[in-house]
Length: 343
Ligand code: Q9C
Ligand code: ZN
Image (cartoon, rainbow, N blue to C red):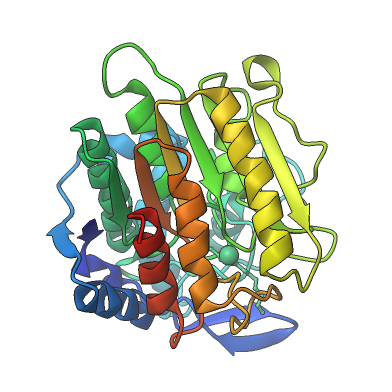
């Protein structure tokens, strides 16, 4: 399978996050992508470079103000005497601000929703390259490929229409889905199946009122798990998107059997939607060894998941989201891809 990669991911190497009332070493590290790349090479996949896209492409799913902020946030932050390790806000608006703040620290909270998603000197370049990996995958599918894997880093599914957070800056899966939806002239239906441990609040909100894009997510119950304020079962879409958003919640500590049964429900919804393409947001933070998740999937489970997803019989673009165990992230991904290829 074609594995789309950009070495520019390494330009983003967040130093710290603030969580749990503590300063923590950041877990979304360049090593994640390096481990996946090594495993993909060992498994014999075809590593291809991301193509180039104009910066305007980000505005197909994001507000221009968000993109401009991400591009320009770092320099004024450092010039104002804040940490050169990256922009991390500490004050957040509880309602839309009536005007842009004149204060660097006021602007820092405008688009970001947490204290774990720092903007470093070259974060924007890395995020844009990550998006380019997903878009290249979309192009491969549009050109007739049956499957492709975008090795995206940083991840994307927590980034919404005009906000970012959860280690995500721009929404790679949403950009690919939108590219596939509109790429061939007449808009076509696209389904996004999100298998990260966490609900993909950003993807949900980007397509919430879209009749063309079905968003289905299998994730940990937000009553107990991040992102806490999104991902409930009664979030079903609105307007033309009514009924086209499906959140399937699992309790903490879910093991493979229950996970697969709910994946079956998710794939049934995808099938009934009759899309032309399927974009899979794949997080391996569902693995038992992952420090951010509580589920009990094994490395071998991912092959069985891949086989099930292949059963949808659609062209499939897999986009990398989370997954933080450096020992298992590579094998989990390559097992999933082997299952997708029917092995
Ligand atoms: N102390 C993705 O998997 N909170 N993002 C973790 C750790 C943030 C996860 C708390 C989790 C974000 C793409
Ligand atoms: Zn996650």
